[in-house]
Each structure stands twice: as structure tokens, then as C-alpha cells.
Length: 104
Image (cartoon, rainbow, N blue to C red; front, side, top):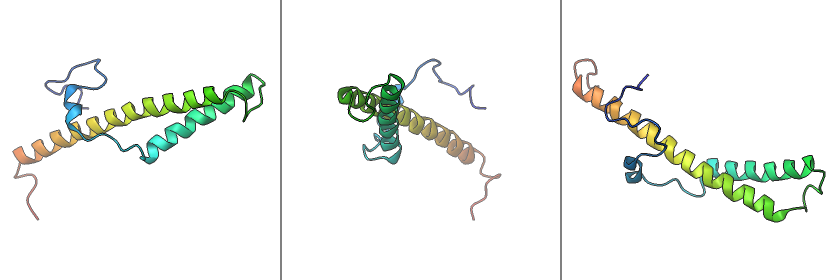
């Protein structure tokens, strides 16, 4: 596991280096899925509280959708940063050990 990576700051959700990465697109299927989960959680909330499922609390459903998309956006941004950091470490290892990885 790469938890001992030099320069790693523990307990920081999104480091400053993540700003150099391109942001996730708003039409990313994962973000759309998170918005759909927010909508479904609003419907489930209405069902649990015995309100009309589809029509009660449309503002609440909109709040759930936007909050889930907002949280999903930053989770995707963190995921992209983690993958970029792992790729950077992997390519640095391959570059520093050329005998182990011959060119084809």
C-alpha cells in the first residue's frame, strides 16, 4: 500500500495539487447517477414520512439532488487526484528502473 508516500498530508480531503487537474464534466455519468440517488433518497424520505411520494416536498427533492451532485463532484475530483498520484508514482518507478521494463 502506498500510504507512506513522501509529501503526503494526512487528513486532507483534496490537496492543492488537485487544482491542476481538469474538473469532472457535469455530464459525467457518475454525477448523473449521484443526482439520481439524491432524487431517490427524496422519494424514500417522503415514503417513510407517509407523504405523497412524487408530489410532496419538491423543494426538498431538489435540495437532495443538488447536495448529492455537489458531494459527488468532490468525490470524483478526489478519485481523479488519487488515480493521478498513483499513475505519477508508477511512471516514476518505471522510469527509474528501465532494466525491469524493456521497451517493446
